[in-house]
Image 1 (spheres, one colour):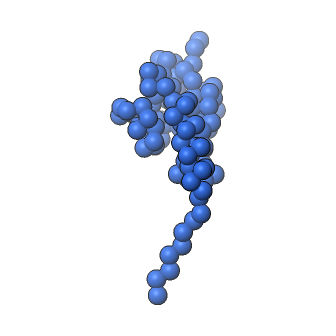
Image 2 (spheres, one colour):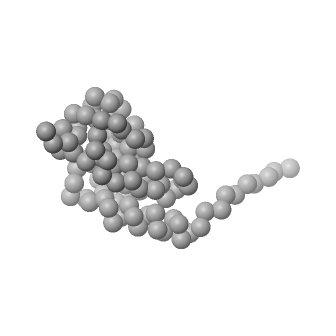
Length: 101
């Protein structure tokens, strides 16, 4: 016996969440991923983005004027945006702005 379990995720939510990403990610800015990539961001920005894994690396990237897209909150950077993940209900992605000193 095979049982298939489908989760209900309204198409309206997917469209709304996707449009938030499209409206808020600017292809002219320099972004990098922290810890993991998100396919929608790559599609919107239309270019490959590097993935940084270390916290120290992320700090240096922010100091250089880049933006960081992260699935986790970073306590050492200034948060610019919180975007709901269109594919996973209840998950959020954070956009951190370049640090200026």
